[in-house]
Image (cartoon, rainbow, N blue to C red):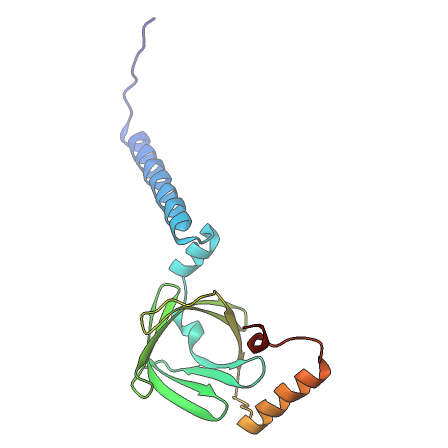
Length: 172
């Protein structure tokens, strides 16, 4: 049996090289996705993320907590009407919040879907959390924060409306 090897022209070599690089990128991407426990689609979105989407007012579901991200790398975090100011940096799908007032650094994995900001705590002052609880915020024109009294009243109303459900403190 005789094999003949055909010489490739420059165009064919270029096409083969592009295909080979494409396959290598896909393999590396797939491996990275497995290692990071992320689906490949999210990984693609993280590369092309527009950090400007993060700018603006983001309010929590119950009006108790919020974030405001500014284009100069500063942020404000609200719990009720109390605020903390600091600096933030974005690296891929992670945002690091550093606050001099609270003497701490918090790292979140973040995702923006439409008008929703989803934050998952990665570390707080270098320590990893026990769970992957997600915190959902909605983009708003203006913050409408509840006072501590209003927040406590909402919590009391919720307990009265569902007296048979145990709170997380009761389970610990």
